[in-house]
Image 1: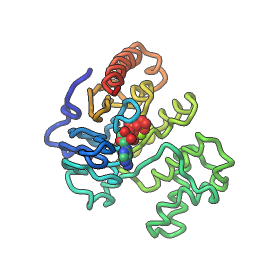
Image 2 (image 1 turned 30 degrees about the horizontal axis):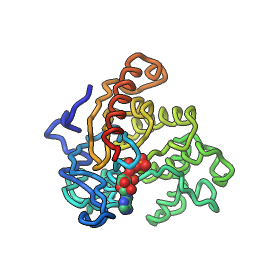
Image 3 (image 1 turned 120 degrees about the vertical axis):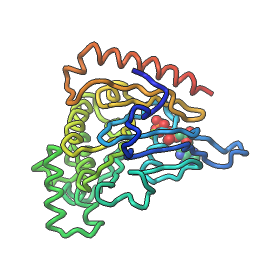
Amino acid sequence: MSTDQPGGHLPPTSVPVFQARGVGKQFGDPRKKTGMRALAPLDLKVGKGELVTLLGPSGCGKSTLLRMMAGLAVPSEGDLQWWGGGFDAVGQSGRRLVFVFQNPTLMPWARVLPNVRLPLDLAGASRGEADAAAERALDQVGLKGFEQHYPREISGGMQMRVSIARALVTQPDLLLMDEPFGALDEITRNKLDGELLEWSRVRGLTIVFVTHSIYEAVFLSKRVLVMSARPGRILREVVIDEPYPRDDAFRGSQRFAAYCRELFGLLAEASSATRP
Ligand SMILES: Nc1ncnc2c1ncn2[C@@H]1O[C@H](COP(=O)(O)OP(=O)(O)OP(=O)(O)O)[C@@H](O)[C@H]1O
Ligand SMILES: [Mg+2]
C-alpha cells in the first residue's frame, strides 16, 4: 500500500517518538554555485515501536535526515521534536537515542568487552556495572565467549554485532541506523536483519534504518519511505502490511515479491527524478 503522507496513519493523539515539520537542509550559500539544497522541507512522524526505512538513490539526503534526527546536524528550517519535546530532554530515561554507523568504528587496540563498555565508561558507570551490562549485550547479539578478542580477530559480521551491542548497552529507545549492514555479504546481512527484528521486539525499540537494499527494506520495515534527490524529498511511503515476527517464509512469499516489485518501480522513478 503506498501513500503520499508519511506517518499519516499514526493515531493523532499519540505522541510520536520523532516528528519533523517543514524540516529542510541547505548546505552553503543558496546564492552561490557551491550552495547545495540537500533536503526540501518535509514532514515525518515515527511512532513508538515502528521500524521505518529510508530508501533512495545515493545523494538523496538519507544520511542528512538521519543525522538531524540524531541531533548531529541542525536543520536549515522547520521544527524537530523528540518525544514531543526539544533535544534537551533526549538522553533522559525513556528518551534515549543512539546512532549506528555503516562501519563498526571499534577501537582496534581494545578488546571486545571494553569496546562495548565504552559508552558506560564515558557516562561514569562503575566498572562492575559496566562489565555486567556489556556482557549482557554481547550475549544478546550472540557473542558470548568473544569478550577478550580484539576486533581484528573476529569477522566483519561479528564486528558489526559488537557495534550493535555497544549501542544496546546504552538501553536506547530510538535506534538510528545508517546502512549498518551495507558492507556485509547477503547471508550475514539477512541473518542480522532477522536478529535485529528480534532485538527490537525484546527491547520495544523504535528504529529508523537507512538502506540501499529493497529486500532488506521490505523484510524489516513497517513503512518504507522512498526518497529522491535534487532536492532530497520523500517521494512515497509504502506500508509493509505484514505482521511481525517475520522469517524466511516471508522472504520467499508472493507478498514479499510484490512489495519488492512495487519498490523497484518507485526507486526507478526516484532515480530518474534524481538525474541532473
Ligand atoms: N557537510 C556537507 N556539506 C556539503 N554538502 C553535503 C554535506 N553533507 C552532505 N552533503 C550533500 O548533501 C546531499 C545529500 O547527502 P547525504 O549524505 O545525506 O545523501 P545519502 O542519501 O545519505 O547518500 P548515500 O546513499 O550515498 O549515503 C549530497 O549531495 C551531499 O553531497
Ligand atoms: Mg548516506
